[in-house]
Length: 428
Image 1 (cartoon, helix red, strand yellow):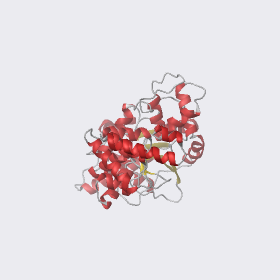
Image 2: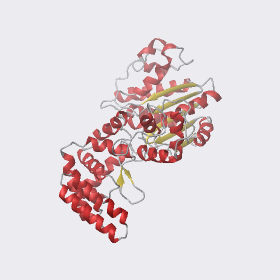
Image 3: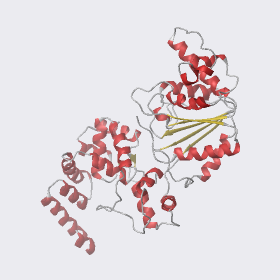
């Protein structure tokens, strides 16, 4: 099973989210309320919710707070995250005045069975039993009174949990605040009308407060501010912040993983390629996502990793050796999992941050890399104008074709000289 990375371990570091918290916190207090927080993995949804709950506890110290997290599983257990959350009362008193229907939760909450109302007689119909459990969970939630229920990672929610949440959203208890988080663009196609990241449509009565917010990655300046806080320094150089933003995409989780164990000296530790070491945790996140893609999508992602720069569909198709419909379907799968993003500048497709591309490149089998580099060099000659000679030379070099790489570099030098760029000509 798999879950989104935990929030940054440095307490109090919530960069670039204060205004958003100021918007969401009072809205969540206008019960009944539903708050939906979306964003890509590692953007800080859990950390944001942690701070949101801290504010809620300050304004409503007597409110019950329950937190559940959906887990990725091949065969999910029905209502699993809700069982986790409701077992919060395992070592304390249950809500008062539980209605008789909550006795239907004996099988779902065996740890609480001795304190629930008596179990009702079986109905003999699985559909009717399921409906009664939904009613019981709704009644249990209403009995909590002033409460906040958080359900995280809804992109992995099982069908039963989704059914419960649809029921609560359609008829929320009057003093409930419901907070839902989900990774953007990963709806499992249960309902085409689902909100971004949610596996079901958000349909609420008119009297319910609804707030939907998307967490964007940090800017370069905010990345630098987070880095300074994590490193315990007043500020970091702008060049350092810009490079860190390029490598991490401004994702707080990735920033922390890159800086973990950073000694705080003035020079950033770079490898031979001018990049920081690739954290094993970031590699695992990328590889786990790759494993969830169909074979054609993994092939297109491997091609994107080899090309390195934002690439249009036709170039990806040519290097991958796929048909256009298959390539577009593969791209849709990669985009849906957040492995690739559409580049707004040139209409191409690329990785969300440099270290993700590096992890995907390292995941390409060693014998396959030279083949893809050779295809890339030839495809660039067919599909780009003017020829990116320096890039083609690098692909030929990695494909084990030094003579062709040398010819491309000579041509690049001649072109640079013809353009009056003597420095570039000499470099080539």
